[in-house]
Amino acid sequence: MDVSAFCRQSNVVVVVGKGGVGKTTVTAALARTAAEAGLDVLVLALDDSGGLPALFGRDEPFGYTEVVLVEGAPPAASPDGRRDRPGLVPGRIRGRVLTPDAALLEYLADHGLGRVSRRLVQSGALDVVATAIPGVREMLVLARLKQIERDGVADLIILDAPATGHAVTFLTSSGGLADAARGGPLRSQAEQVVEMLSDPARCQVLLVTAPEETPVNEVVETAYRLEDEVGTRLGPVVVNGCYPVIDHLDADPIAAARAAGVAEPSPSDARRIHEAAHFRSRRQAVERHQLERLATELPLPRVVLPYLFTAGVGPAEVVSLAASLTAGIEALA
Ligand SMILES: Nc1ncnc2c1ncn2[C@@H]1O[C@H](COP(=O)(O)OP(=O)(O)OP(=O)(O)O)[C@@H](O)[C@H]1O
Ligand SMILES: [Mg+2]
Image (cartoon, rainbow, N blue to C red; front, side):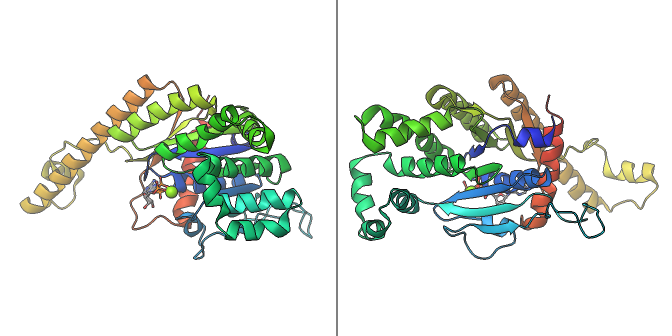
């Protein structure tokens, strides 16, 4: 599938997965992939922006005001009339946080209540309201997301969602509120959120998992719950952190060295190589089994991202994962 078309399928992508499977990393990689395909991208983080800023080489956490993370090549032609600017990504990436407090402030400001709103939020009024009305915090954030989407400020908005358990509550709470509220702005906001979440042209969920037992169980369960309870379009499942497959791991290190005409390892080195190969072979078998299980239990296409053997994942690794993501998307039917 064409990458630009893939990234333009819906205005918002919510990245969902079990804790630690790589949601934030995949959010960054998808943003990069979309920007490389020429899209103007806005990444949204909840509460504290976690590791997202660092993945774009930033030390500071995101604030409520957007920051430009990747500049993007200007669309205008350069003086010599050529458009290509080597090394520059055609699309721009911006980032910001989206918190219930900020969402409430922005909502009130939009409705001409800017002056009272700050005092209201500072006084802790939101906490009182949130305790009285479960789901209102999540709804405020999603209502703001809906507004940002409606304003058309970017070609693609990517939300790095909370870990799965919370993500399902996060995405289902507005439906509950729309049912519970008798009328007024709360109900209409909740209804508009539900409308966005269930419209495939406006929003889709990208599920992320690791090729391991529990994350696969959880991603299957989450997929069905999101389809049943929210009616959200589900994108391909991103299976993150798969070891690149190495063949012939059962080879005898000494015989293999002899056959290759290189120096033979000492017996103790040969034993260590054999142990490492055994570990890798077992790991590959586990991953193969989990990928097969995922394919049978969840009828969604899959995109596999490699495990990167590095001390830390930073901007360079995001570029590399974006290349894998691009290849995975291109291989989709
Ligand atoms: N493909 C990969 N190869 C190597 N390391 C990875 C890869 N993807 C993610 N990681 C590392 O795994 C850890 C968890 O990743 P990440 O923070 O993206 O997960 P998360 O799902 O957002 O976690 P949380 O639920 O805590 O928000 C990080 O240290 C990250 O650098
Ligand atoms: Mg994260």
